[in-house]
Length: 419
Image 1 (cartoon, helix red, strand yellow):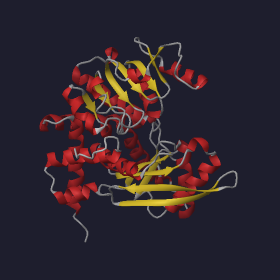
Image 2 (tube, helix red, strand yellow):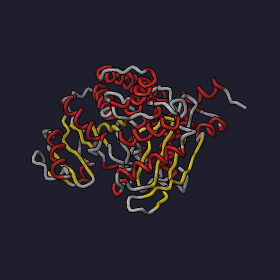
Image 3 (cartoon, one colour):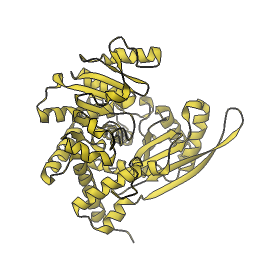
Image 4 (cartoon, helix red, strand yellow):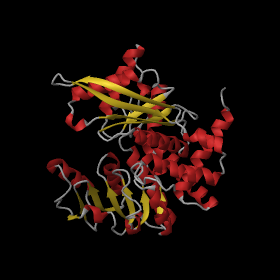
């Protein structure tokens, strides 16, 4: 790592892992430059009239990291701490994620610096429609397909789809994924990322000869990814013994009732003081001994200062970038089996791909068919990464990056450079 390396900068973390995989693949410097460089970056300033009549200007981004294997694909996040570096990193991760699961997309990402928690629906709609209008020439079913992310939702996607369609003068459902089902969304999309985590976790348990009913799971995060992963794992017979949220953590060695915990949070606004478990320290809960740890909340929760405390056999990275690059060697030395984010949470983009396909066909699949095809892709991708890791004697994360870089580089070489 370079001396000035900032462990918590997501772009530097992405680049550090890229460099490691590129070196292991012996990629030449020219191809490294091509793979490292975003295809396009757009910065826009969005004037919005707030409900009180005041004008505010918000800064938005859209980065298309790669379009070599297909349209750019990636979410849009609304948050006060969005940075261009973060969007660049997330766009590159999407490129590698799509390549790992072999779906025909490149990587993209968008963001707007705002605080959606203090904005009304009308203000968010104005912001979203203007943001979409500014990007109208670069997004589209064949070029760049956004999706929800932090601070955005199905409703946000509906506004984007409507705005884009108004400009095109006909309905274009395939411009975004993660839409409401009634507007061309896919069955199974809401659960897709959590279900993908379950599928690869079951594969890892099988590899270690651990019966699912004996597996103790700690989940960090009770949002869409963590909540769905916890619920689906519990339904599959795994014991979710601990759930960690921003305001506290609850523990039950016999396994938490996830549905009851969800109802408790809905009623009280928090997971703490749940009758079906005991409150535990949210920071220490991350270090509990368990079979599977699912960090599904935010970036950089496992880092160089705490990686030695992790006591899980398997880490399934539900969030993007929950482990810093400087923590990787420690986890490897401890013999922890890491299912890296670009594989573990790829269920979401896989079902987004299914949604895009269904929109373009105008023919929609049953939830059973969506889940069956998701399981096929996630299982095959898990096998690809683990086999590659064993063949090249590297950890799973390096293997996933090597596999992804190799696939994208191969496509670029096949296509040649237009000059």
